[in-house]
Length: 276
Image (cartoon, rainbow, N blue to C red):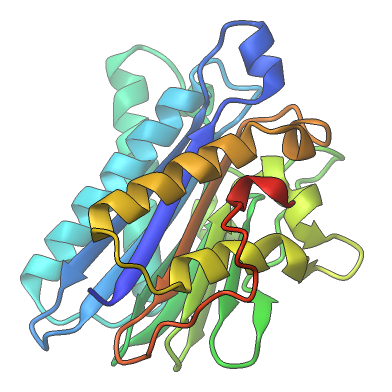
């Protein structure tokens, strides 16, 4: 086991009050490469609140990205670059367009944002993003924001993978180094997870999550990850989050453990729920 990953999507209070589901979706997957390394994929989509079927669009986008990545891995060795990002995003765009045609609707009815990270030891790291939300990485220089969240032409607007010019608004950033810490999240967490004045991560928000994932544990790995995932869900539905946002929120957290001795967190309380 070289990657340890947890992710949760939780409905915002505005959706809960109206008995609506969460419109976010998320992919976390690990793939064994021919060289023996493990490739981690973390991809997050957020259905637009202005789109009647935004949540379905997010689900279609995530499924399309997963299928396209699996297909690409089956063809040959891959390179984590802009061309691969465009293949994945185009798959999401085309998948939603096909779904819209089948339902006699327009792609904008399924509008969603899309962002993700791919990382492997010998390949480095690639982050891609259309829309708001955020990707925070540590590639050896401490936590940094991979891509500045995108704003649209007007206030409270952003870009979506359903746009005809999705290739033009796609942002891609590559790193030669492996990201040993990764967080990806939808815009419901932006004001909590980022310092928007400086476009930098709010490190206290992420520190405990990374520490808990890095801890040595005598528990079965599956049991441990289940417990951490449930704790993450409670945190996302807790007052420290819901008092600051009523939006849906997704948070995926990953740490690289391969070849690195796990560290024990300095906080021994074990309380993931207690901090924002």
